[in-house]
Structure formats: structure tokens, C-alpha cells
Amino acid sequence: MQFADRLNNVETSAIRELFKLLGKPGIISFAGGFPDSAMFDVDGIQAAVNQALAEEAGAALQYGATEGYQPLREQLSQFMASKGAQGVAPENLIVTTGSQQALDLLGKTLISPGDKVIVEGPTFLATIQCFRLYGAQLISAPIDGNGVKTDELEKLIAEHQPKFVYLIPTFGNPSGAMLSLERRKKVLELAVKYQTVVVEDDPYGDLYFGEAPPPSLLNLSATVPGSRELLVHCGSLSKVLSPGLRVGWMIAPADLLAKAIMCKQFSDAHTSTFAQATAAQYLKAGRMPATLAHVRKVYAERAQAMGDALRSDLGDAIEFVQPQGGLFVWARLTGAGGKVADGNVFAKRAIDKGVAFVPGTPFFCAHPDPATLRLSFATADVAKIREGVARLAQAL
Image (cartoon, rainbow, N blue to C red; front, top):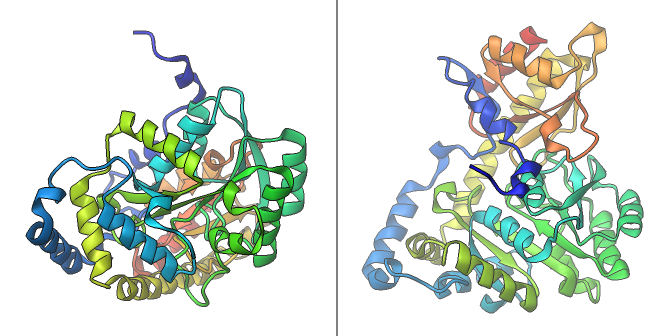
């Protein structure tokens, strides 16, 4: 069987391959990038399902509009407004099957083979795979604890004239970094200066542990004339409500939305109307603030426990920035004291000790740092986090 040439540009997810190794009993996993199912608001979702079937069974169980179920688009418009995003009317967004479909639609509508796209180094693994599938030449922009280094980003934009720039400004996957307010404004100014589209992926922005993060690029675009017309914003309910609903959305200029809707028609016709109706009823019921308050508290405790344990048990053999939100600790092995300095080697030794994480190299589109690794604190309670980190110390 002869497969499409585009498949030569991608390979199976290293994370999914790692999951195959997690079958042995008693293993503690810091590998997954998903929320804790124990914190899903099952009662609230059940009530939303019942309400959707009671009020609008015909619409919820029928085919729907490709751009999204109108009651949900209206609720998402209000949800965005509650977070400070003004002027996002229902017609300014489309509902996607998870925010990952938004990335696929961007690939379909914007990327021609050979086009250059700038992403953070490191960035979301599925983004690398998706954009490469459509033939993009990916350019890596360096980051630190405050997100992408905008001086370096400007040099890369000027040199490569990319089709677009893709960023996860708030608690990125895998970096956990939070782009500073100053840099956020600079990103929007660069978009206008170079007339370059910027994609803001924001699945984690609501998962902050203390003070709220700086305003999103979408919110700030009102203060930088001309930037809104060059900005795409992707959101999701997966990390804050339920991944199983597969409800995300994309806010973009009208001409891009039109092309994305056309491509979505070819792909899945529409996101599940049943899932959309459920999400609409959930948002309408006003349960989201309490849900967010609960998950923020739990994840904050787990993030602190992981940071404390890493500092205590691994000491100067590892360095990291304590996350202020999201689901991840991004760390780097130092090799201090002759300890392991390669994340891939460390991962295999950790599996033997009964704990798993993801090595950092797959998250780089170029120039991977083999000393890096990603640890998720989301699905393990504090006791398991402490035990898991103790096992990491043994493996080191």
C-alpha cells in the first residue's frame, strides 16, 4: 500500500509510545497531560445532559451547523466576556472538536508545503506533528520562565517571514511558562509591525494557582491597534470541564473562519451537537466558577507538593521554575554530582523504579535539549507525588 508523502514528515507520538510501558502494577505516572477524572463535575454534567434532553432533545440529537450549535456559541461568547475578552460575538467564533481540531484547521487553511511557521521551543507535541503533516518548516523560538523571548522572536520573524507564529502564552504545555505582560504586548506589536498572524492557544489559562495571569493576547489586542485582525485565539473546555466532551473553539478574523468552516465541513460536518448542547447547558447553569475554584485549589496543592519534593529529594541535580498554573513542571537535569543528565536515559531508569514521566526531546521542533523532561502533577494525589518523586531520586 502506498501512503501519502506527507506522512513522511511525522511519526507516532513519543508520549503515546511511552504509555505502552506503563502496564506494570503499581506504577506512578507523571506522564499524562490530562486532568484528574476524580474532579470532573459529574453531577453538574449529568444535570446539563438531562436539561439538554428535556429542553432541546431534537436539536441535541440531530445534525447541526458546521460552525457550531448556536446556544453554545452564545454561551462561549459570554464566557469569554467574563474573562475580559470584549467584542467576541457568537459569529466571531466556531466550535471545534477540541482545540486540537482548531490546530488542524489552521494547518489546512494556512499552511502550504514549505511554509515557515514559528513555534516555541519546547511546544505542544501535537502541534509539531500537525503542522509538519501539512508540510510546514518549523522554526523554534527560545523561551525562558517568562515565555517566548520576544527579542529573539523578532529576529526570527524578520529573517523567516513566517506564515504565522504559534504560542501558548499561559502555562504552556510542556513548559508551564507564563508570558509576561510586557512580552505579551510586544508580541502583538510584532504582529502589527511585520503583518504576521499570531495564534494564541489557551487551554490552560483558567488553571491559575494564585493571582490571575496577565490578560490574554485576545484581551490585550484591544490596546494594540491592528493586532486583532492578525490574531487567532483557541480555547477548550477539556482541561477545566471534561476532555470527553471534545468541545473547543476558535476565534479568528472572518475570512479565516469562513475557510475553517469549509474545511471542517469536509472533516466531521460538525462537532457533536449532543456534546455542544450539554456544554451550553452547563455554562448556562453557572457552575463553571465553582468548578474552576475547586480544580485550581487541588492542582495548586499538587504543584506545590511536587516542587517541594523535587527540591528536597533531587536537590541540585534538577532545576525548574515552580509553576504558577497549568498541569506541568518542566525541568532540566544538571548532572550535578555525577547524576544522570539525559532525560531519555532517566525515563527508562525511572520506569524500572515504578514511576513515569515524558522526556523533553520530543517537544522541540529543532535543537532538542536532551536534559529536559516534563512532569505532570495533575492526576496523582499529594501522597503519590511524594512517593513518585522519591522513586525518581532512586532512579537518578
